[in-house]
Image (cartoon, rainbow, N blue to C red; front, top):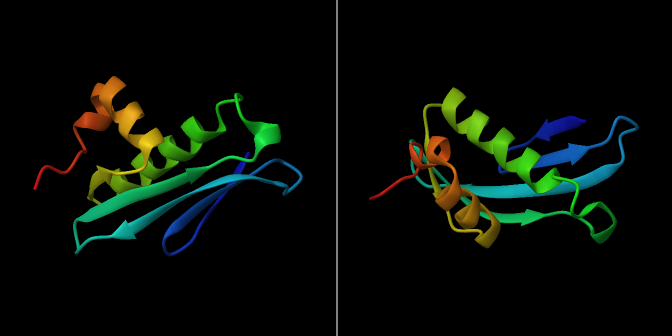
Length: 92
């Protein structure tokens, strides 16, 4: 799998460069990002691709020293279940 990280988007591609989903976020100031959308096409659902995208977003936030607002329903559920993610959640 490959990732393309753009200004406000992380795109997941398979090894052939085919689109497998994306996650978008909004920068809220210098230290916070709001994960507002996660999308995986129907043919790829159930294969863990949304989890891969969210893990990459968490890795990105850690590297950039940012906190996360998980406003996307998928991200919200994942944050409720994962203590590591909860440590990065913004409560402001």
